[in-house]
Image 1 (tube, one colour):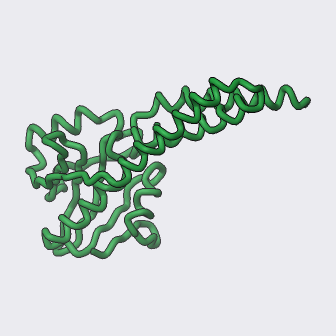
Image 2 (spheres, rainbow, N blue to C red):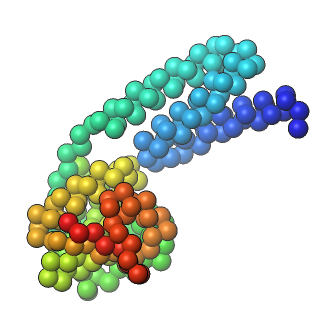
Length: 201
């Protein structure tokens, strides 16, 4: 593979990352991937002496870094609402995001007859998180702990742990699908047991 071809492939990689970033629903991830793509494309532009393109991508990197800083330091204010499992608004939200829930938790089965604690987290009146569980004494087994795509920055999880503790829950147990959930569990400090995850509040 000659040098010229490698340089061209490097440029294509930058372009691909910039384009693919716009397909992401999470604004935070969009800006991270866009920043990486812009840095690569900026280097490529300098290599081929396309200075206007390099300057434009340099400005994009600065803009992305600024907004990433704002997103990281922004204080989101959430509301924590306990609802009945058959609450129409809860059922509507579950139906509204059913496809995404199945993607996040492949093969999940929700037994609504067994669920005895249901919570909705909202931001500025919009439902952004749903937690369904089965409580026995002071232990809550999580059946569903879901955040909508735009709010998957772990801030809901931290907010949830604080509020569940205030509800008298001392331990969380999770036995559901972990394929797309393991990063979240690790980030919030869940410990791996034999066939489940556990978090002491």
